[in-house]
Image (tube, rainbow, N blue to C red):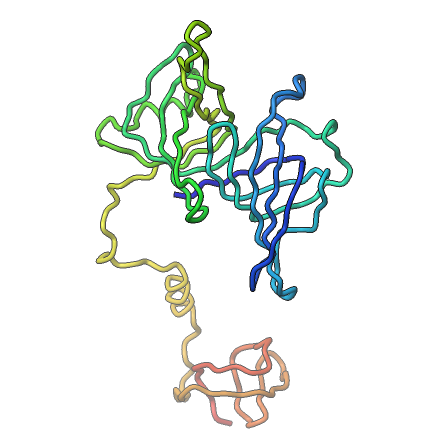
Length: 285
């Protein structure tokens, strides 16, 4: 189940090592979550694979520590940071950390839920399980809590229908992801409410598991309909003409409103291509 993110982040530091085929860059990135409060940030543990063969195209552009970049990639959400395998890195040299906009973490994920939606205040809430493979040494899944305003009918109509007739539902979710820190009980210094990843939902598409079997059904291809229509509109064959096998010709000259090929046979079509294979009715001179 894919999990993709895009964001603008600041490169705090980076290291590089090489294998036989790739230069592997490991980056510590920082993304701002609030324009008003510069302390509200999220850390990104980024890995980028750059081919050593310069003839192989890559979306990972050259960058330096201290630069701001536009980042896209696959990700796994961890407690307080995100692990990212970068698919695209674009430096933004006109920006620095203080000027970097707080765009947050925009994501699109495929998640699975076995719950029905519940209302908390004026919000609809639902938990989803997300999986993504970033490598053998990285976590492979995480949970997120989807939220949206219950008064948004477009979203409410979809989320209210989840798992009403099924045990589980898979959906494609998009929106802004942020991490809510855990709450510590000051009297016991223990975690009273664990931290969690919250998705502010922008859109959702439900993936149906009850699709009809169409393998045995006939397929109505539109271009076949065009061919049958064009065949019905083909002019009738004049009297005295004979139907010949496919004819290949490469040269022709225009004669009045007909086409006169160099073999002396009238054609009732005007062709724009210099080599053509077609079935036509020929009228011998």
